[in-house]
Image (tube, rainbow, N blue to C red; front, side, top):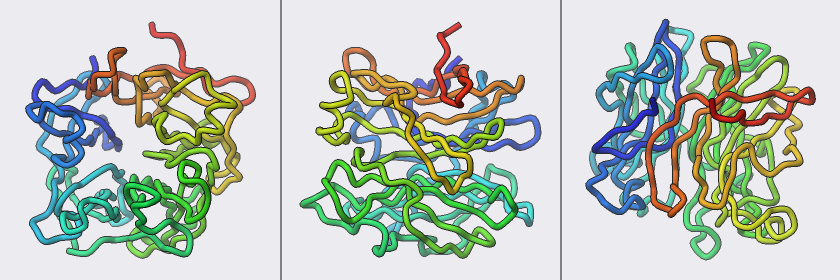
Length: 324
């Protein structure tokens, strides 16, 4: 059954494997807020674990905003968890501050020995946008400085670590500046940003990127709401307003990445699924999980799906298999 909490909405999520357990971290906010748009500003990072990806044991919250004043005293948003060579766990997450009205996003880290109790090793962020490559805050162009959703993974040849993140380039039409940013590190603590790994030229942002290799091909999923798609592209290539989950393909994680011809891995007029993640289930099958975003009336749902099987075509393209 899906991860549903009676008293809390849940949305963006990420996971890490430890022994027989898959640990799921997710954004959570009280349903008592009534207005789901307020969830972003009343957020905690929740935690659950499962042995079958369907039945979840809820654990204590992992992380929440720091005490004021701090760079992350307003929100703690989407990130990822990896295990360092020394054996401890590292959570990379997005933070914003009350002093900046939540408009400037930075990336921070927290440590854990057991995936349950997390501590911030420093009061400063790990990374903030390098303005040589990524857009600065200009509220006349965009509603925030996009620098969030870090996804960290080891280099396939053992040459340190890579981080993909949501960002925007400094030039272009406002709804076509979305990029997937890139940084490298030898040790998970010292990072050097570089140019975007992919420039969309059609999306305002490319949210919640996740990359993984499956049978020799690399995939990178991301998501976009219909309001943040370049209108010229939408008019020429889309059938009405659609939002949802997209993906890129490559032979190597550093690219070149390309978009398949179809617009979506999963998309529809009411953007029913969002922030998808690829994973391989216990039988070795490639699957997709996502959070349930809106129902057909447009009402926010706020729960996480069970794994949904994917079909991999001969050329590597993905298809969401019919529900069983």
